[in-house]
Length: 160
Image (cartoon, rainbow, N blue to C red; front, side, top):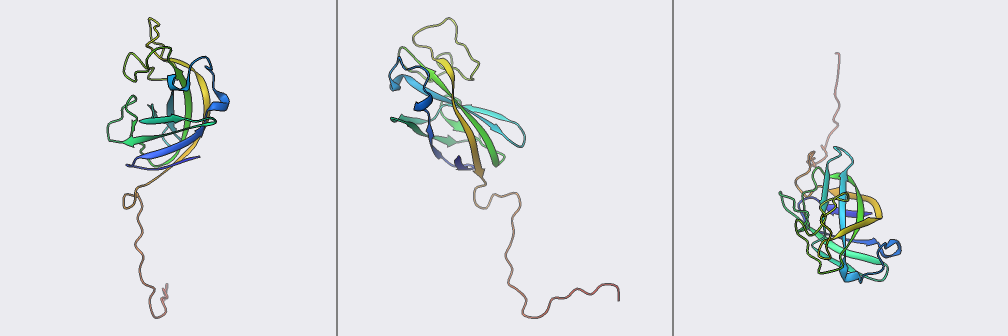
């Protein structure tokens, strides 16, 4: 499970290499496209991580925050807070990896035509899971103020 906080940068470690699809290219030619779906309002956001490092069994990376999302720059606005589902798709290149419009797919169904070595191809789903996004401190929808306990009894009399 990935855990994050609204309006902040967050990192992740997920298992991807056990399910790797395109083993004909080096790991430097692979990027992971994330699809985030909010459990509450079913809104969807896509993003490639800002930084991604593929290790022997897992992948690590991070996403940044801004009010305006950007698929290719790894910028998300994960509001409302709560539970999100994530799906991770493997995207591979034969040539140089470029994360920009027309060079990298924006969704899992995006086929870039005409095909070229410089255009990424979605190979398929490699992992999925849940993510909990907590509210940033002092921004919660419901905020409680702690009061000191009264020194005497605190009875409420009704109907007298």
